[in-house]
Structures are given as C-alpha cells and as structure tokens.
Image 1 (cartoon, rainbow, N blue to C red):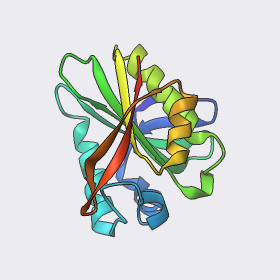
Image 2 (tube, rainbow, N blue to C red):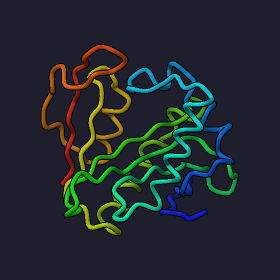
Image 3 (cartoon, one colour):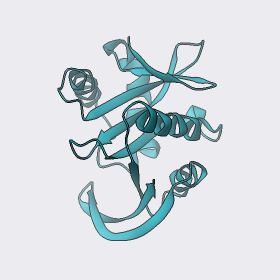
Image 4 (cartoon, one colour):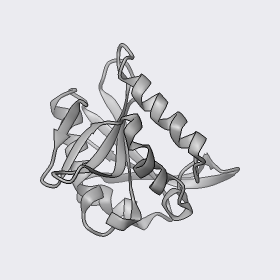
Length: 174
C-alpha cells in the first residue's frame, strides 16, 4: 500500500479492502457521522466507499485523495482524511477528516489535518485550502483553527444533509 505521508503518530496511506472492518466500525456510528451527508453506513455503503477510494488512485489527473489514518507501528486504522482538488490547475482544494470516537480528544485529527495541509502544499503545490463544517461541530472548528485556518464566512442553508439544509462555516488557509 502506498503511503502519502507520516506524522509523529500516524501513517497516512491509501485505503485497502482489508480496512473494511475498521472503517465500518466508525462509519456505522451515528455519533461519528452526525454532521456528514452520508451514513450511518450499511456494510454495502462501506464497501462502496472503499471501492471508490481505491478507484480514485487510477484517475488522471487525480483530483480525489481518500486517505486512511493508521496508528504508526500498530497497523490499526483509526479514521480517514481526504483531499479534494477543486480545479484542474491544482490551486485550490478542500480537506476533510473523520476519526473513530475511541481516539477522540487525543489530537489525532489535528495531527492528520496538519500533515494533510503539508502534503497538499508541499507535494501538490496547492495554494488555497478550504474546509467546511457544520456550525454546531465545535470540535472540527477547533481542529481547523489549530491548523491555522481562518473563518471566512457562515453559509446559511448551504448544504443538504440527510434531507435538511444546514448552516456551514467556511474556513480558508492560504
């Protein structure tokens, strides 16, 4: 499996079908996906996600990077993160991250996001990185702020999530 980057405690790599049990463990939990448009996942949903994540590696140019978060030295999948290039001149991208609640409040989402930013800027030359989060998701907002993102605006009713429109915070890092 190809590794994108390492941090102090994480190996960030491509997803594999063998990650199914660990991914499904967090993706089926309502608490984990409460601010996502998807989930809680069925087994079929999780398998479809992994199939799509694997398929993205073969796209030319590659604009979607779904990355597996694994505890370094333990081969234990704890979540995922993503980099989504918004235009083909590779100037802007969005990031996202999700962590199994067994590993919340340990700084791992911040560590993953920091590594993801470095990878995007250093390896891909991305100039502007954006992230959106539900206005109620204070934990994700703290992660973004720790990573140097600035709140650009609140977007009212901007995102349809499980049948209703939510308000989102748009964060930007340049």
